[in-house]
Image (tube, rainbow, N blue to C red; front, side, top):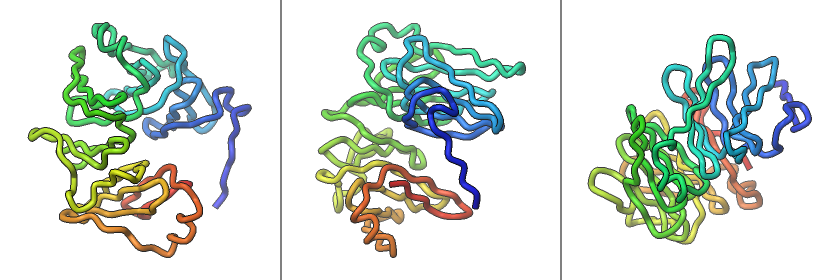
Amino acid sequence: PTVLNYNSRDYSAGSQIWDIKAAYGRIFFANNGGLLVYDGIEWQNYATPNNTIVRSIQLGQDSSIYIGAQGEMGKFILEFNKNISYNDILANSVVLKEDLTDVWNLNAMDSILIASSGPKILSINKDNVQTIAEVENTILCMARVKNELWFYEQNAGLKKYSSNGISYVSSQMIFDNQSIVQIIPSDNDTVYILTESNGIHIFDGSSIEKWETNADAFLEKNTISCGYYSPKYGLFIGT
């Protein structure tokens, strides 16, 4: 297949991409320079009010794109004339806003937006923003798995948050000394757990096991940085 490579001179923004989402006939990139948007023809970059690095993206309803940045969280809204407007969703949460660090993870649970910043898990429901859970160390990655939030707490392991509070996903393998870079639910009960330097593990609905593949030798020599699951094509890994 043809692969097109774009550099920062092509799109006139930062060189690092932290997150990618696609919808509404566009591709959205969390970029050092803001929210970078590509419609297949033109590139547009939309900076946040404080001009900080955008770390995460979550697609909303009604052509809205939520972003997590450095000390900022907001909602970009696509308009019919192709303009994009911005709403600060932390405008009424001064105390929380002052305490906010990089927002690395955004997830949607029904109409509620869930974010992680440092050791905190935040719930955003319209103008109501609150801390719903807090751990000791930084949360490095997070994903919705059915009705639970799974997250990797740095140096502490793979945990989950539910109505019963916080607990380990599995007592069998807690990953306390392995860095998890991404948690990827599939379209069945399987959850892929990508570690930085110890390959891929899978949760089959009852237990976690190391997934032995013909790519193991390659993964031992290269650091996993990201992944994506396609129901049609399976698991893709980026190094």
